[in-house]
Length: 251
Image: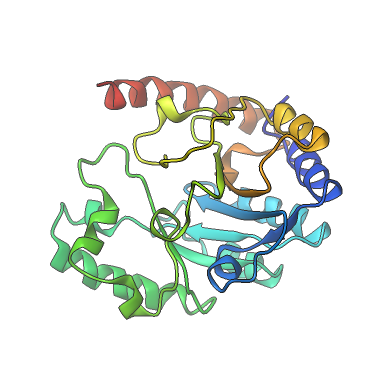
């Protein structure tokens, strides 16, 4: 089965064995990513406990990753955040302030600043990443048409600060690696033409050396579990979500 912790571990091991170094997004923004590398990013949308599980897998392999937390209770769980920081990982803010405040940028920026202060209790947050908010008409990135995140000590936002013509973008949106048709906003403009559906295909591509040398991998840890019950629930829920998202993104 795909989307288990075992196959996630196999993916990381395969990348390591084939010469990839792993960096957090913060390290990338600070110019530390060199050679063949993976920027490893996690969007903690739901089930924060699953993020602790992936963080342990990474720590055991000597890998650091970036975990972006939302403000909602299913994501924002202080004990889980502390556990992930203790395992050596980066914490960032998965912001959705513009959607929360119905497009009112003045209210959204106050909320953003307060939440940034909150998450900085756990880690000196330097990076942020927008939440796609697929059911909202507001693109959370548009807050930066009025304000500048650098004014808040932020050094990077992936959708603004990564050149995706140089860095190959992989995301498990839609519970597959080629789910752009299900994505409302988690997509990038890129010159890369490669496409992979399953994690097994990614592992094989790493083994055969057909993956690009610079990669950003984004996962949603809620999808990755060894629990058959939780795996089945996520499978059913995601398939239903994909139907709705297809309707939203349809031209």
